[in-house]
Image (cartoon, rainbow, N blue to C red; front, side, top):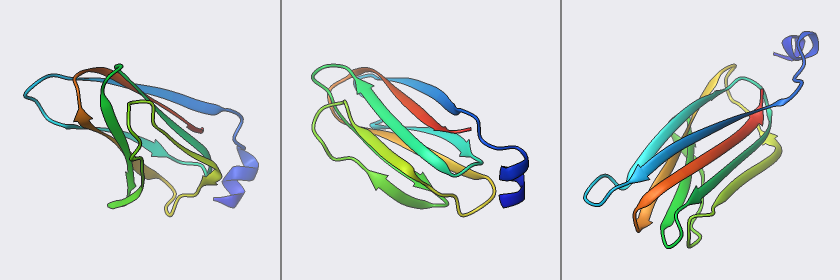
Length: 113
């Protein structure tokens, strides 16, 4: 991994945006996946509809790594140079859990790519 990082170093962040919508009577949890192949910064931002309450859960390798519990739908998880993988390629799951309200939301994920 160290040799690969030297020969093909990281040059810029990758940004991915996931979108979803909560509708009355449907599931309270939506999952989105992406793959980390480099260590580095990780920034996850939730933007939901005004009046909703949603939380983020970040999981990898079958374990919950972090979560938010703030009110509203403007949650954020951030790791400055702290997103270190345990494997060469690691699938990360971001879950958006609806606590209250309905409507569209987006999750922006920026990571070393």
